[in-house]
Image (cartoon, rainbow, N blue to C red; front, side, top):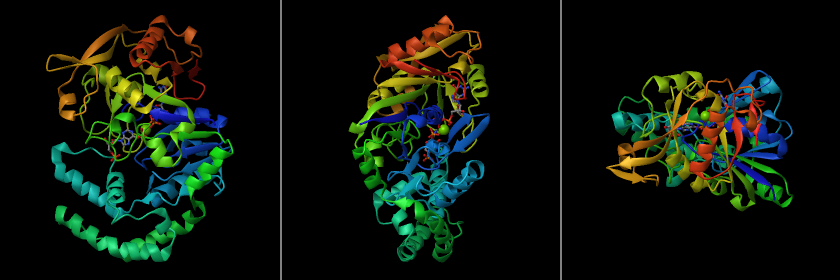
Length: 427
Ligand code: GDP
Ligand code: IMO
Ligand code: MG
């Protein structure tokens, strides 16, 4: 058995896409198993930039099969737009090369409208979602009565029946929150979605059966995480989270493949911390250093273009993410962004109401009161983007990576010093 998983240990955007792209050639199958087009994975190579949302980053390699498994929520229009973008740049993606789960749930326009109405109703406490209808689609999945899955989408009679049941009720629910809304028309949605279904049908299959067969045949699987541990619906900074299990906990439920097949669980971390959307962020830097990190690291959301909130590396939060996911090792990304900052800080504990706390708080109200207890690590001034060996890093950069390793308690096996594939130190 040989499977690898790539999990973000912070609040997302840890550069999982780069690691997946790097590891894909060693694998046969890449599996996306959670989230939807809320994810934004940027991959750079040969001077080209690819932005992937729903398609696994593995799609850029023709040697592997890409699987969009059961736990993903799919906006068919967004999916086809992305597929067409990839096709125009890298050629056709035949159904043998990409499989979509018939159990995956489908996002409809009313999910997006419903989410907008919920967010508006929360006012200043809005979750700050990506506005893609992700949470409202998962809400329908958990509620069951209003859910529509890929298997229903590709069967016109089932789709028509389900839309006729669901759409009038959705109109009522959304209107209660937003009286100005224009009601959705079940027939119009049916007409639009059957055209998507016609294109998607060849790709839709029982991906769980496919993956079980692949495991039996000793194929090499790569699980591509989306979002990050602290956005996990059960274990993250609830309610400022996404609506699925985005820590390692979600691999099994989202793919249908036991995590016991995984022999390398890579926890991906940024050398600092970013967060998009609402919720507490103890090490946030609302100052020049935060702005500098945002500009040098180009910390603007791939999906929404929102400026990402930036702060120091938080070993309490990240260590929690690592333990939650059961990682074997760490990949420390974007180390180059910190070059030139004279006095770096790493949060090693929180001060909450005068108490030193090292366990990540379960309640956001407590996290909001947490003041970071910071350890100073001297910075470096050298440009490190050309470094390819740990031994060639400036002593202080090495010390910085060692401090992360010591505080998190897992070995650092990958260090990234730039967005390109080549700008990677593999220990
Ligand atoms: P993901 O969602 O976890 O895949 O991460 P994103 O793609 O949203 O954000 C990571 C960004 O950092 C992307 O724009 C990458 O091209 C870029 N990136 C990846 N690794 C490095 C690195 O080591 N240094 C720098 N400067 N940028 C990097
Ligand atoms: P990748 O895969 C960063 C955040 C949103 C918001 C919260 C809920 O690129 O790391 P949602 O639309 O999921 O209901 O929004 O989760 N969020 C992400 N933040 N990276 C992501 O994905 C994210 N996906 C969702 O900003 O705070
Ligand atoms: Mg991202």
